[in-house]
Length: 447
Ligand code: KE4
Image 1 (cartoon, rainbow, N blue to C red):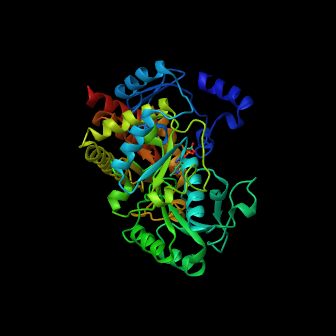
Image 2: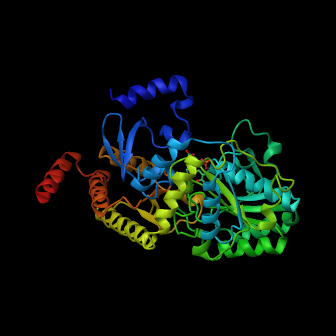
Image 3: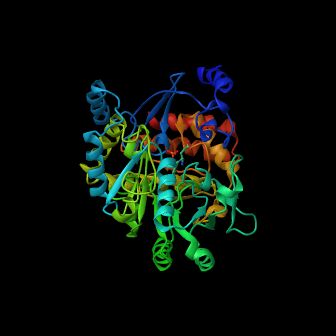
C-alpha cells in the first residue's frame, strides 16, 4: 500500500474527507488522492516518489510552474527578515502599484487572503455603494464559498436561487439571482423585472468552474450596457483569468471594463493572496475611508506578496510569454483532437490562452453549464485515471479547467499526447492486450 493511500486513511480520521478543500478528494473521478512531497517546473512528486506532469498548477496560480527560481530567490531574501506585522509594508504599495498599472480599471485595490474574500468583499462593497441588495450570478460560475454565492438555480424558475449548501439560510440567498452563462436574453428578462434592485452582476469573464467556457461575442459587452442602463455595477471575477490569459486581465482581451475586479491565484504566486479593486469612487466607500467594513489579519502579508510580486514581475518582463503559452496550448489541444479522432473518440476542446477545457462530446462548441453536464463524464473519468496511471495529473473533475505553465516544454506536452493515445486506443474497445504491442511499437520507434 503506497504512502499516499496509508496517509489518506489517516487524514480521513482527523480532517473532514481527508482534505482541506473538497475537490482534492477525487469525488468527481473516484479513487484515492495522492499526497504531494514536492513540485518543480511542470512536475509534482508524490510521497512514493512518483512523478506527475501537472496540469492543475495548484488550480491556476503556478503560471511559471512549481518552485520557479526567481520566486524562490525572492522568498529566501524576504523570509529571514520576518513573516508578517499586521502593519503597512512597502511591498503592499509595490503590489498595489503594479496591479493598478497593469489593470487600468483598478484605480484602488485592497489585498485579501483568498478569492472568496475578494468576491465576498466586492459584493458587500457593491451593495453598500448602490444601496441595493440583489446580485446576479451565472449558473456554473463559482466565486468562492461565501453564503450568498452558494446557490443553485431554482428548479424550473431559473431566476430565483436556492442555497446549494446546508447551513445557508434561504434568507441569505434570497437576493441572489441566477441566469445561464452566455444568455443575454435571460439577463435582460431579469433586469426588466428587478433591475432597480440589482446592486451588481458578478461574472467570470471566461468561465473556469464549469470547465472552460469563453464568453460569446455579445455577452460581456451587453452585460456592461445593461449595468449602465440600470446603474448596477459590473464585477469581473478574474481570480482565474487575471494575469492568466493576459498581462492586463480578460477585460483587456474582450475590451469590456468592469467597475470592480476580483483577483487571486497568480497574484499570490502559490501563496494565499486575493485582491479586489476598481473605480476610485467605489473603493473609497471602504473602511477606514467609508462606511463599508472589510478587514483581514494577514491581508497584504509580505511573504505572500513577495511570491505574487515576483511572479507578476517575471510575466511583465517576458512580453512574449502570453503568446508562447497560447501557442503551446493550441498545439497541445489540436494534437489531442487528432489523436482522439484516430481512435474515433468524440472529443472537443476549448481554451483561452493557457487555460483549457477537454470535453468528451460530439458537440463542437460548449456555451453553458447544461451543455457541459451532457458531456460523457464516464469517458472523462477513464481519461483522468488513464493519464494518472501514466504519471499525468489533470484536474480531478470534468467541471474544472486545465492549465499550461511556462515550464511545460514541447517534450512534456508530447509525452502527454503519447499517454492520451494509449488511453484512446483502449477506450475505443481495442483489445487491451494489444496495448502492450502498441507500447512495444512505441518503444521500438522511440529507440
Ligand atoms: P478561493 O477562496 O478558493 O481562493 O477562490 C475562490 C474562487 C473565486 N473565483 C473563482 C473564479 C475561482 O475559480 C475560485 C476558486 N477556484 C477553485 C477551482 N476552480 C479552487 C479549488 C478549490 O476549491 O479547492
